[in-house]
Image (cartoon, rainbow, N blue to C red; front, side):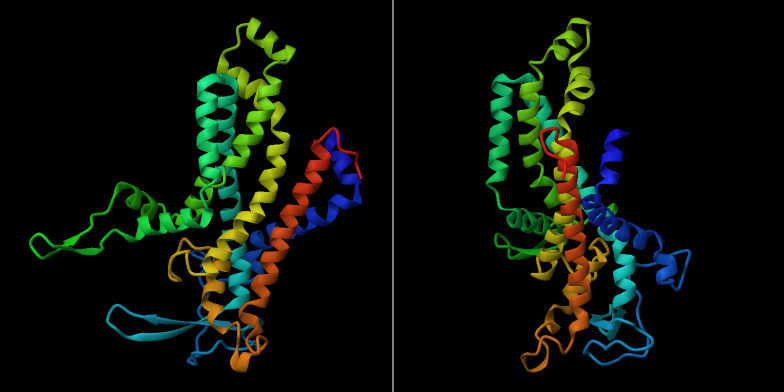
Length: 335
């Protein structure tokens, strides 16, 4: 309680808190800010009727932030030019962005805390082995991991040539592909979780290696407490402060990374339902960023609103992490 009071009375803590709260409010108030056509089954995107031009439509009384265009090819070969409302996608996309950032950051933190806590408490050969595994993952580029997960998802159903009898062979779907498809999971989310837990493991490993030598741990062990109780009841809660700080920063960082991968084209297809809506806006609008005659402001609405939203989202969570560091670190001078 005293910590919350300290946080509330310091005016420097309010800008990041209000910025993050703004995105939470937009996510909760999406049905009021951008009413969906079907309130019982709302969608993150809204198709605007009456636009057939392949270029994005500028803002007007019907679409306050214009549209982005998508050339869709139907199952029967018929082509459709679809226009999506940018404002609607920004508002409803806040939900998918928050969900993506929180799930990805918490997933990476969970793996890292478990790995670092167990290895540090057990020590010896297991600690050395797990930390070498952590170092190996640290050396692996995240973008290579994203490409790997995307490739794993795209191999199902591929037709390859069997040169032994010159026939076609269809690649069967694996259990991993069936699981990801059934739960409608973004492969980029899995890749970011799989290649972002190492910092958490390193931090918790160092903290617990110091805390396990303290007297209260020896007292708990002498009273008959088991290893799991000592780790998760006594050690992890006392070593979790820097994890919370890193977690807050990673919520925004994960979202920005996903948007960057989507923009450069390594985040799946545009019509994938697992991709956050803000990233889809970037994918649909990237061909119009330069604009006509090299003027980047001709179609400004296809990238400036979503880019500003991403910047504010990332800055808000990063600043919140900085302020939590001041609050949770007893050696920091409160400013």
